[in-house]
Image (cartoon, rainbow, N blue to C red; front, side, top):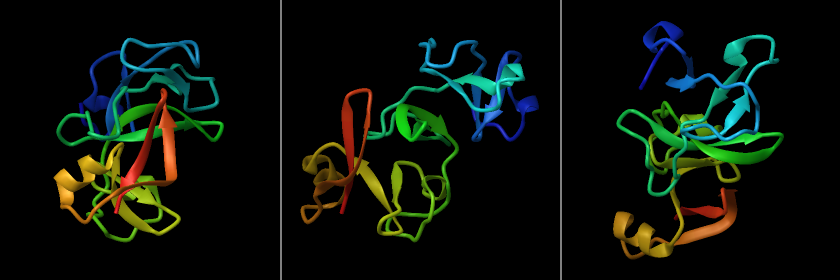
Length: 149
């Protein structure tokens, strides 16, 4: 569920990155919907939250959300449904959170492009001249994602 603050979420949930997340107790443990991650210093119950597990391509989050890599210690541990940014396809970006749903900010190029696993996905979504590239990629739970260009 989309949220702007904790008051937008049901009891036992916390608003993080624009989406309600369940509390958890042990960082790294499996949750019913993802992985338990520490987002604060650990002194508050809301410092450990379950990611809302998802796939980057095709984006499996609901309306008003997008799947992004959740990174712990510089390593992606899960996909997480979060509120999308507003930068459209091929627009300029500096952060993953800048881009609209289904898009990745390829910071090496400073542009929002769709996540992909195969060239056929890119071609069916964008046209025959597009390919899936993996020179900038992320691997989450054994699946490697690149970008369409």
